[in-house]
Amino acid sequence: MPDRQHADETRLVQQAQKGDVEAFGQLYEFYAPLVFRFLFSHLDDRLDAEDLTEDVFMRVWEALPGFRARGVPFGGYLFRVARNALYDHYRRNRRRSSDAELNLEWEDNFHPDPAESVPMNIEHGELRASLAKLREDYRTVLTLRFLVGLSTEEIAVAMRRSAGAVRVLQHRALLSLRQELERQESEENDRQTFKEEPLNGV
Image (cartoon, rainbow, N blue to C red; front, side, top):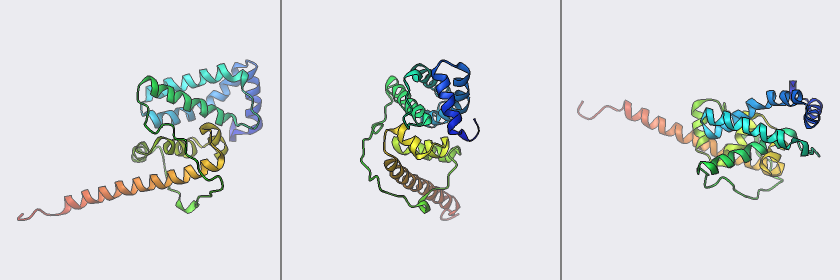
């Protein structure tokens, strides 16, 4: 499904809704790696992420006949199911984050400054560790945007927020991530300085 062409995706969804397993398979092949990345970034356990990815697609397959696009991107709908599956997993394992569901109101007309974006490679180990220290909704929006590659509109559907709210959330998440990276850099510099300072009397 090159370039995620909307017409092709819509056609595949419609065919899958009629029970076309091959069409659903094509949707699975494209989206499964992205769903896995999203889940793995939260769970940090490959086996759990793999199992939950399969659970997400089983849920989608069962619910697909009742799916009505009406302007809702399929990708956004899919990741909404993924988020619900993730929360169910937290509940089953009694690991629900204290801020897992934050119903914050943001200004829909806010436009973040692109200059404040953080250059990032989310798959890098150190950055993954930094993301893990962010609150859940910050981690989710950054993962969906930069690791999975969803559009603002798709993220809005997945997170049940307006597009404007997603833009603000992303902006604040990037600021928080940058502060965390700067904090880690400062701590690393302090450690290096301590190692290089000679001991008195030596």
